[in-house]
Figure 1 (spheres, rainbow, N blue to C red):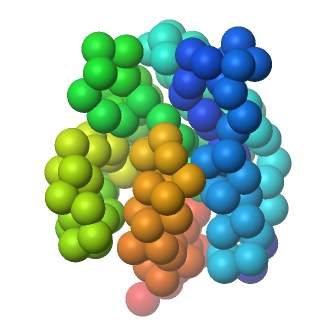
Figure 2: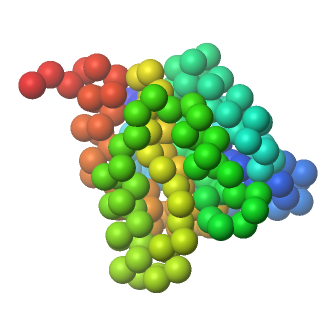
Length: 161
C-alpha cells in the first residue's frame, strides 16, 4: 500500500527562508523508506494558528492525504501553537500514539516531556504532530512507525475485522 503523505512544517524562520528544513527531510526519508509512502504535498508556514489550520485543512480535504505529519511548534514557547491548531482541525484524538512518542523519547531525553504534540483524525486522514528537530522527528516517528500501517488502514476505512 502506498500511503499519500503530506508534510507541514511550522516555523517562522523556515517560512522566511532563514533556516533549512532538515526535519522535513528526515520525515520524507522515513515515510518513503520505512512506510512506503508518497509525499503528495509539502509546505512551510509561520507559527500562526490560522495558517497552520488552513494548511491542515487543505492537506486533508483537497489533497486527501492519508497521513499528515507536522514538524515544529510543539514545545512551550509562546509561538508554539501547532497542537492547538491541530485540535481545531481534528474530529477525534488518538492519545495512545502521542503517549507512545513521548514515552519512547523520554527514555533517551527527559526533556521530551516538554513535547506537546498530539495525534488525531480528520475525516479519513491521520494527523501526527512531531517535534521540530531532526533527532526528535526520528525518535518520535520511529516510536509509532510499526503501528502506522494498521492505524492508516483503520482511518481510511480499509481495515476489516
